[in-house]
Length: 111
Length: 114
Image (cartoon, rainbow over all chains, first blue to last red; front, side, top):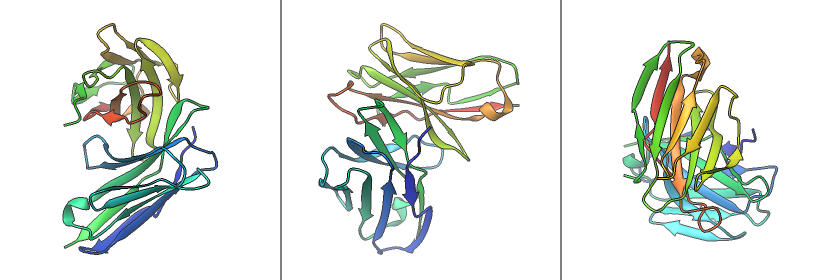
């Protein structure tokens, strides 16, 4: 099935640094979601985006729904050790009526 | 805690066997989704049910089947198991089809086929 391209694949950053990751698709999506997954746990919803161009924040996290509807971005400001985990984007298409998940970005924060 | 429960947490079984994974959605959620996550494949959508009816199918093998019961809990049945079926299986739920696309995931069932 279709998978979204997420980049970077992994990141190693110092505590306090800002983080940016993005997700791209060859198809248009109506909804973009961002999840964080800790090892052995289920993904936890961070942010949901429903309109092209929408910019939404959740604490230190900010995500944007790309204007083309084919991409989305997630930024984390002032990273802390508990930000460690794998971040997934997910896109929902009304046409296919199903979600497609990104390949994940593994984030390591060095104290 | 997302409110979605899955049992069992771990399952170890042999090739050729059949297992059933169970999921209870968040209170009030009508949609249930099943996903498979393996190391080299990421999260793969398997199937979605809404209020007891199948709504969307993803990469679900013919050896796998699912259903959603009147009380809205769902079961994923995996049969003729192969080594490659070893993975984390997640259930997620959402309010409905169009009211909310926000899915909330359960803690997963780790299946090991030996």
